[in-house]
Structures are given as structure tokens and as C-alpha cells.
Length: 503
Image 1 (cartoon, rainbow, N blue to C red):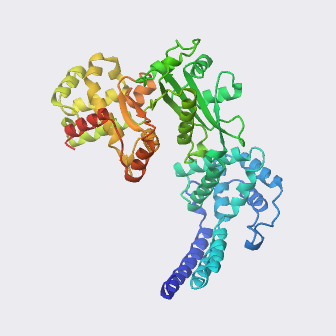
Image 2 (tube, rainbow, N blue to C red; image 1 turned 180 degrees about the vertical axis):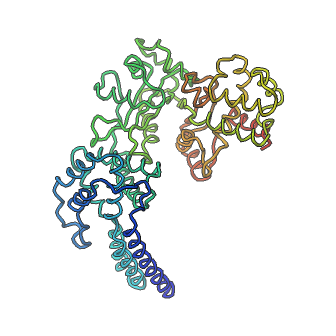
Image 3 (spheres, rainbow, N blue to C red; image 1 turned 90 degrees about the vertical axis):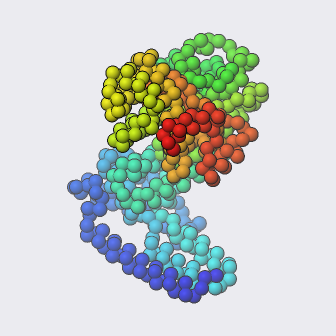
């Protein structure tokens, strides 16, 4: 139980908070410049107010919460139609008004909080009832509308796209309103419930799948773009598998797509998977299938960001493949390394300013770079190397490619293993697979020689190996203790980088 002095102190702080809230609201009402992206009044404000006042119903009282009749379906349809008719900049104003004017009743919540403190010395049943009232009071008014929209045809897809707009507002800093962030949290919570793994359907995509699905699979492929229908046919044909999660509320819309290559050994380059055409008309020989290589996973719905789908898809696919190929024991990704090249350019610029070029390359390596680029020692050589990385020109020189292979491999290993954000891997693809319990297994040189692969990651790719008996342990180590499980090859390259960089 809470002491009387603590209760009095909390009451006092709540009263002060309520007074400040009232004052802040008054100030905001008198100063409409709070939305910093607007220099002129929002177009159609009156229309926005009218539609919101009509379709966002008041929150029923606690006593009538289960007895209030649902609003007419037309309210949801009117909201969807009105929002869809708005220009991009007006959508921000509309969402700002929805989230701020139709959110939580803060006055009621503060009063319920005081009541909860008053009941602390009473019986448990009373405390639990007041807690339940407080929990209900924390429901934003607009949450009811969102729930009702999800029940009309096309409503779930509408809300997924609505959250994509909210995320864009937040990421672009078009608005810094805490109400917008609260709306995002409410939407994410609802979508996480509606798209829980038990409600998803795993579909294998084949050349016999509906044309609409095949076209969407092609359009959504974000890792290795599909060039034409023949290319797509190969990716769903022999020695290949394509799986997608779908949801009953969004028919014909794959939510997350996983492409798999069935190989003899774990692939070390993407060219052999997406650019060699020998498998188009061949029959699968089960004796040549020992490994499953996950070479592309794409989330198709921006509005489902943060809703866990990809990790569950990999686990479901592993079970499917084990059922189809009981002897299969090797599961691995062949993953791109987005951001490596830009990180490397930033590192070279930093070391150039600090005069620490010798910490990145050995004396012999710098001499070879100087000779290959015809540049002077020191800063000119660093700048020449930075420009070569930026333009991918080094790939045209066999000599430079040979010189830079050990350099780029150890730098890439450090980028994946040593560069962190809040203690976790900075690289988003690495973070995804490590959370799933994979091992950072092998870095592969000249693994993606496409212009995109060279520009993003200097042509290097990485295998994240899924040792099925160890994934749970590895995942816990990473999530709880931020420990990255890596192979001897990766750790050896990291050690070389640390030795050169005096770390």
C-alpha cells in the first residue's frame, strides 16, 4: 500500500499538472503556429471539423461500454472517403486534429488517478475496479473509430496505409506533436493484434499462382529487382521457393515475401541465384538440395513497420522446407549490407581530417593504393580512395580490386560486428537476423557485382547462418546481453581491423 504522505504529494503534483495543462491549452489555442510546417491556414478546416465531429463518437461511459450500439457503417466510409480526398499537406492537419481533439480525456484520467490513490487502503476488489475504470479512461476517443473502420470492406488496408502516412509525418519531422506519436502507438498496437502470426496464412507462390499475386511479388521485390516475367518465372520455379504471409482482411496483398534458393552448398554470391538461367526448365534433383538460402525478404506494407512478421515467416518456412526435405540441415541467408559504402566514406573523411590514415591501411597497402591511383601519400591518397569508393571506379581495376579486398573485408566485418546503435548492430539487416538467433557466419567477396550491390556494399554480402538448435540461445544472448555470435572468419577479420586501428 502507498503511504498517506505519498498520496498527498501525488495529489498535489496532479493538481499542478492539471493547472499547467489548462494553461498550455489556452496558449496553444491563442497561437496556431504550433504546427511548424504551416505558414497559412489549413485548407478545409471547417470540413475537417464537421466530419470529425460527426464520425468520432463520444466514448461511452464505463457503465454502458458494452451496451452502446455501434455507429452506422456510413461513418467509417465517410471518414475513409474524406481522408482519401485530401492532399498530402491537408492529411497532416486532419491527423493532427483527430489525434489532439479526439484523444484521451486527460481531466477524467487525472480524476480517476486520484480516486485510485484514495482506494489504496481499501479492499483489493475495489482497487481492481478503479484500476479497470482508469484503464478504460485511457482509451482515446478515436480508437473506437479505428476499430469500426477495420470492420468495413477495405478498412484494414486503409488503416495500414493511414499508419504509413503517420510514420512519414514522424520521420520527416513535419510535425513534432506528441499527439501524432500517440496516434501512431495506438495504430501499431491495433495492427499488431490484427496481424498476429496466428491470423496469418502462409502461401507458397508458384508460376500457377494468380497473375495479380505474381505481379505484386515482382513489384514489391526490394532487394534484387525483378527484371521481367522470365526472371520472375525462374524465381518461383525449380530449385527456388517463394513464400508470403497473407491476411484474410487484405486479399491479394502479400504482406511479407521470402525468396529461397535450394542449393547443394550455402551460396557465396547472388549472381548464381538470380542471374544464372540453367534451372529454368530443369527438374529438381533432391540429391542436389542440401541447403536453403534466404536471399531476399521484403516487407510490402510501410504501415506494418514494427509489427513482427519477417522473423515468424522465416521460422514457418524452415518448418515447411524441413517437411518437404527431411534431410536438409543447412539454413542460411545471403544478405546485402546496405549502408556499408556510405559508412566507409564517412570513416575515410573522418580519418583524413584527423590525420589517421595509417590506422586504416597498412603501410604496404597505402603504397599500392598510391601507385594504383597515382596519388601522393597522406591526405591525397585517402581522398582518392574515398572518391573511388563513392564512384565504384575501383571495380574496373584488377589491381585495385586485389589491393582492396583484404582492406574492405576487414572494414566490412567491423561495420557489421562493431558498429552499434544502443548496443545493437547498426546495420538493420544484421540486427534483424541476429534478433532471430542467426550466427554472423561468412563474409563473401564479389558476392554482388551489380551496380547497386557495389554502390551499397562494395559488392560484399554476408551469410547469417541458422543453426536450428542454437537460434533460441543466440537470440536471447543478443536481445538481453547484446552479444553477437559470429564465426572464426568474421572474428578474425574484426581482430585484423582492431589491430590496424589500434582499438
